[in-house]
Image (cartoon, rainbow, N blue to C red):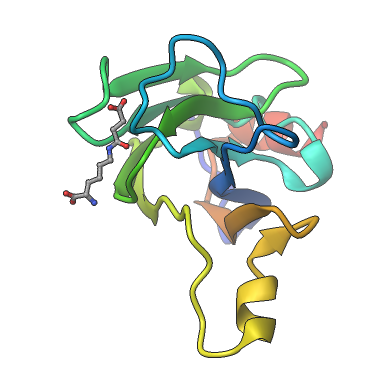
Length: 162
Ligand code: SLL
């Protein structure tokens, strides 16, 4: 196919982690979770304000720490849902996310790295507070823009018809 010359299409998205300590009142530990696990957490890739991005992103492979059973997770895009993995654990580590685009894009997969954050860090209480949601969970989110450089014409139509 032909490419649309001189055109760049930007699509914003966010990725990151949200973690919550187990707590009898606010976040009880489900049955079967090992004793040494201290937190529940999620890692995700999604659109801004939960807008669907499956028209350009097909699947995401999340590579978790090897101590976690079945640590490589492939998540297929589903309408109305973020690309997400939910887990429990005790430690922080780096997560590798491999983004696979829709076939008509012709794009190679791209890899992102993200640190799972369970504990808020910072020199000041304000800095720590900025990492918390509702005073309990710990968030580590990143805003990113996917650039499609001179997309194929058919893919350009997909990108701009949404
Ligand atoms: C390290 N940062 O580099 C540590 C690794 C691994 C955390 C932390 C296991 C969960 C499960 C878990 O939380 N691992 O057993 O499912 O050594």
